[in-house]
Length: 304
Image (cartoon, rainbow, N blue to C red):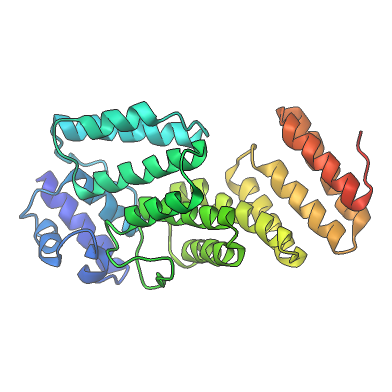
């Protein structure tokens, strides 16, 4: 009965959003497989069901998705890995090793999860070159989008959470390499994807501010202060609506910096001071010192 309900919900959401079976199934499973799941004729793999609901921008329903011991163990490891990364703790090598060493072979979705977080580990610990990490991210993306390359247009694709995370980190790595324009365009695509799709609130809260943060930084560094200001103000509003105390002062700083760049120095100075006060309160000493040095050198503002 529960399996029938899962398929029924998938079909209901898909129909409501006018998404074809071909669009939803692309890269995840055969259309015939999705059709059998929707009719309640096939027991779906827990990871496949999760990704189908993610592409529909719907939370996984609280129905009884069958899991064997290895499914359950991998699910718990995924939660632990994602929780650590969300806290900016990238000491995930042992968990990834445990994830890949379970007796049951990883399916392609579990392999994509593993390959992405492995590449993220390499990037954060700088144990591979940026070019090699970028290649690893692309390989992970190709597990579900077979023909993906750095020039692939994804505007007509539905994306899973992992695919979004991979694209975000591809953009960051491109920026590290020096491909600034390409990185900005990719991050703008991700922002537009969230703007034009009814993305689940939980996913928006987690990811959207990250896109805005990078865009505000990168457009500012490119000399486009108007764009930087626009993204910073949008980021401030997102923080107001959904919270995130740790990133909030950086949006405030970027707003002040952009205003000063645009000739509104007194207004900019007010926001920069506000940002520094928050950084000091939160204990962000290193960023505070760097910011003070930067604005003193650029604008002559002295907060010491």
